[in-house]
Amino acid sequence: MKKIISSIDVGTTKICTIISTLDSGGNVQVLGVGLVPSHGLHKGMVVNVDEARESVAESVRRAEQASGVKVESAYVGVTGRHITSTNSKGVVAIPRNDRLVRHDDLKRVLESAQHVNIPDDRKIIHAIPRAYTLDNQERIKNPVGMHGFRLDVETHIITAAVASVQNLVKCVRSVGVEIADLILEPLASGEAVLTPEEREVGVILADIGGGTTDVA
Image (cartoon, rainbow, N blue to C red; front, side):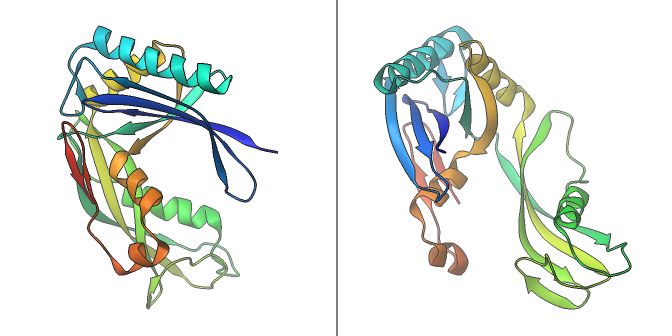
């Protein structure tokens, strides 16, 4: 069965809503696109809620009209100068007698890595595992199914200004669309255009927009 996924890119010069289907094989089919000039934004951040809301509403309306599908929720892109990142490490013990690493251990160690000191006016939007260490074995990509006593993770933490995120969320929700998740736009761009080999070896991705340039 195909799953319907909607996404909204709220940019400085344009707002784009895309409604697509995703099948079990990971294939995406675009059903409708709504592209409109944006108002009420500056350098990727909302500076006029009413104007930004009207632009989002028109973008969503056009995508719905083109696809014949109503947008109930959407993945929303986040960008702007308020985005910062840092590296962090987490560690947990494998408590079971068999010492077998499971998916919940990955969740626990990632939560451990997010116990970092950040100001009250900022929030974590992504915690990206870079590599795992199981006992003394380093640079493990996926330790699930392996045996060990101690699991470490090197994590890249991405934070955003709470006020900027709240303003963006308010604009989207005010047009009747719930937030499925907030996605850092350079990450979305990387998933869209980079090959697995490029992501593994390492490249610089520059997303040059009308008001901001994101580098990842």
